[in-house]
Image (cartoon, rainbow, N blue to C red; front, side):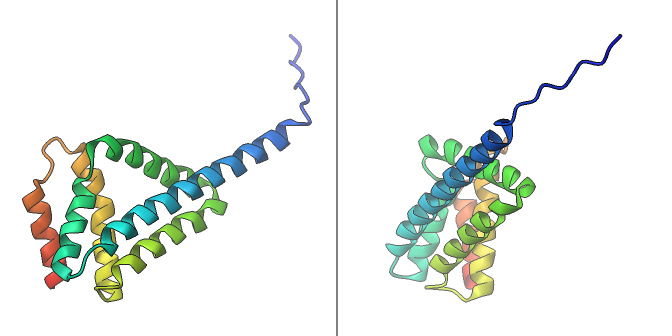
Length: 146
């Protein structure tokens, strides 16, 4: 039995690089759009209490967009964990999110809230018995009032 010869495709490398660039650009645009929405929601707040309510709204979110955004977010995390050139996309997104919270909170509190938003958004979407809006509001309140 003879070994099957490997087919040579000189343009394959260029297509792979082109696809990676396309994915990077798409994920970058998604992250910027998500950050803009996040900042806009938080930007409407005039008090710490209003920020807390906005955070609960972000976590509980609009059913129509939450699933799509969650899917794209976790695709970015997964793909980005294997593609080092995407790490800055994720880092910049985190920095923008935290910057939006820094208007009302110190850096450790902003990080805690950002982490809560990321985690609770996922849990709220996939948990068999997700936390109620009131439970999420109490968690946000605990962090805000630490």
